[in-house]
Image: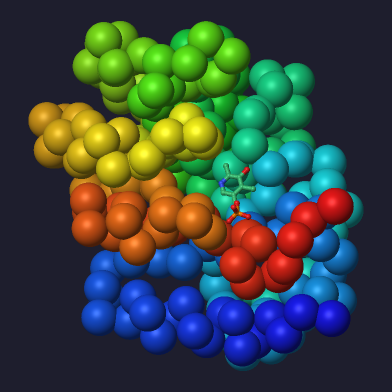
Length: 213
Ligand SMILES: *Cc1c(COP(=O)(O)O)cnc(C)c1O
């Protein structure tokens, strides 16, 4: 079995001088027994990409460890929003007005406002979700004025076959223009680069937990 604690500590050491960077440990596909070693050393931020898997895996653990913050990093279907709130403290994948509207309704019903990132289709890839760079300003305004969402920042997944650097740089500029402080970007292969461009939430899976099936 992968030495999860050792992998985790190496990353924590690498990023320790960047005190505003939070590490989201991405646990999708891994069973809780594989994750427990870092829950037991008080790691806080965990990421999942599917609502149902997260419900099954995290509902009782979150009760036992109330400091844990759960992050939804994958696509959120509108019919799953009612299960996602309040299970997830952070939603990284707001990618449409329809979803914004649904979250708006649900956060009133539940009396819980998740922290939200607007996902940007930074590589303008047709198969990928996210708001286009040209639509961002208008979309952001609607999220605040019409839907009363707690937007804390922007999120991206750069094209997987290209150097991430120019995309990270674009994200940094977009964030500055909107005066948003948080940026969710950087994965196992490019988190150090992401931090150079002001990422504040890096999302790391395989480098901690090993290869996924
Ligand atoms: C799976 C996933 C990650 C983590 O990927 P690794 O390469 O294993 O670190 C980060 N972000 C998102 C959106 C993911 O789906």
